[in-house]
Image 1 (cartoon, rainbow, N blue to C red):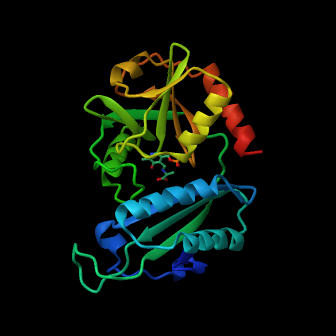
Image 2: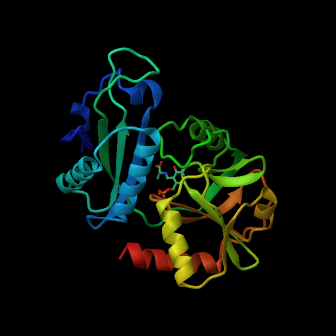
Image 3: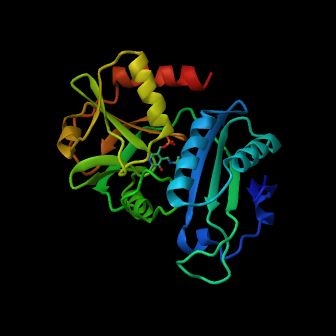
Length: 274
Ligand code: PDD
């Protein structure tokens, strides 16, 4: 079945959508995006995703009505038959007449598609620890993801399905997720900074940890902390909370049966997927 997509508000089969090669998204990755999940036809934390899209638009000075984005995302869900899945939605600065770093005054360009997806029974992750070679504004959900893509493809070539990044030994995040780890019965996660994306799932998991009154700390952590960790988790809109079974280039003490992970996972499924 052809994928359903939306281009500047018009919903159509993805094959019928024509995008100009002069799009600033195509030429410069001059665009920001969101990935929003839905379950039983209902968005999960929709308003929080829209707030983060607004943050990304503001920080990149891309002028676009968030209400228009909202309408288009809702329309895509309503016109699709999918019950469970996610919507990818991006906004670029627009389409120019010549290629120039200096943008023309043009309307923003909006593109999204809907994907069917099952959030359950995902396998534990095999991860490679890599240098974080990305830019200094990773709090913006930009489509400029070359730093992630290069490292993730290297990791894939040795059988991994995620990366765990560090900047000069300080842990940042995954290639497409945030990280948590457990050490001495306490759950840790890197604090928010321009070096990481403020993940919506990260926020949801922290709420659960606090509600359950589990020992928890947000701060700055190193590769040495990871070596001592008894459990490592990645969180994202599509992964939910997913445990790590191995870091291929680091000796760890990971025990895949972690009680704290089970508590958080069960509460997460109960809160968002039932
Ligand atoms: N990625 N960090 C990075 C670099 C990410 O790309 C993502 C999400 C996250 C987790 O954010 P959230 O919990 O809001 O999904 C953290 C999406 C899913 C993607 O690019 O496909």
